[in-house]
Length: 324
Length: 301
Image (cartoon, rainbow over all chains, first blue to last red; front, side, top):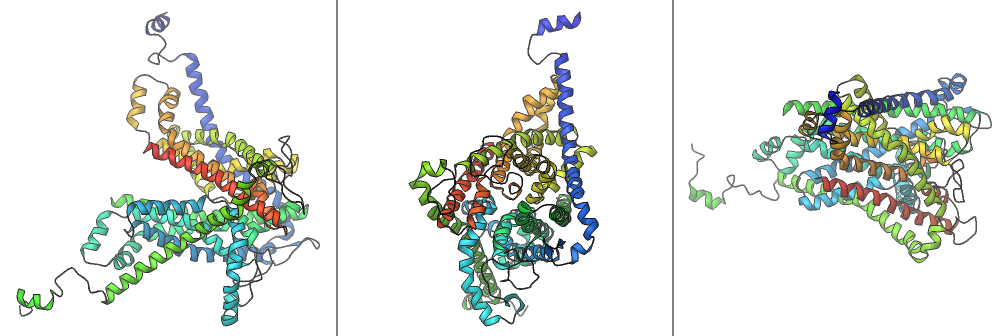
């Protein structure tokens, strides 16, 4: 009775007690949101379970030897991925060294008053555009620009420094060096963006105090800013490394898909992801199971590396939140 | 006290040690200059690949695209030694799969962000969902393809739908993280005022929180869409490829990125040129979404 009166007097705005439909709507909305949060968690478990389930026959058949053997032979049904694990890690480490140096330098370039703030924002946009370019386009660019460009350089290095393990083979076309260079360009925006954040987190007074003591810019950066930002930079490098590990298309196009372990930058190699990209479409039966096993290995490696990166990033954030 | 000099002496010596001017060839200044030059050099080196890629896209892909605009954008891809041809099915396929992925990932991502940031701010569920989203951001894209292959493709075969689902898995974390950020920035006073007026949580959500956070959420969605449009690894064995226009959701589907991958390794000049054209079209699509994202987030600030 009183409720009906209430409704009549106040009308249809939202300043009235909720009706039944609104209460049910509220419950339903909450239910859907929470269901979605659950489904994200279930999704990752489902991914693990699905890939794991497909991989079980291969795991039983090849066991630990899968990680230490070096043959991938469909006809003999012998599968092992040591060369791919090596290629994945080696290409990512090379990319991390080249892309990491460039990325951190760019972060310094953008945050330490090398250029006017407006020019810096344009430059930053340019670096961000690098992240927007699809992986296949990098692959295409690598095939038709980078490899022809690299070939004379590689030839010269091999001629003169062939005794050095990095240069001990000729570059025949696709190989480790073009793949790792493209990877370096691809992880550069990630490393640069997180490093910029790391430098921005340093309280301004630290920098002012440093310059107040009469240091040059190089001294301020090397002796104060880099050590202060070091954990943030480490997080940037680890997350960039994680990105490089999982990168697929550019590598599948550039690394040469050759099942061998070599220190040389100019010999073809293979990675777990590009092995999957190149073998999956034609695979059947046992090979699919072996590929699922390889997927599980890749999942585990990237998971651990990314977890490490996120952990370091969190530690850094906590450190600076505490100091403010 | 014997070190103290009179102003006259100092002037004669050029205020050495007392002024802020540095000698350019003193080792510290020299080190600083060398360092500055190195930083400039490395920064410029980093810009070279982008400029080179843009130049290649325009010079190799642009000529074909601008001279034969309509046939390139609508015709079927050429076979073997055939000349001409286009990338029509691939453009349609890419757009359809991204649309499928968005219809799955956008509502799911936003609802998840709501339950992380608003319903379960300090609950175990909220924290674990946030952690999962963070972990998924570093998830290799090819593994989402492997996953969908194991779940859908083995039973139902290659299809546009499977491709869309694989892309949705990759879009989710970007949307969740961006939406969380946007929701976290809604001023608490605004929602408190609405609650004070007797609104239900859902009303507050729909009329106050979501509209306020919308620019931030849209930025995340646009970036996720751009990322998904450029993906190819998960499509290799979920959507596969097709030379024809899509007629049904349950059949193999062409996409720009897989077309680039397939054509890049072919020994025919015509196909390689088409790969460049397709790259240009793909980069334009991706950049449009990126620019949208940037425009929206700038408006907000």
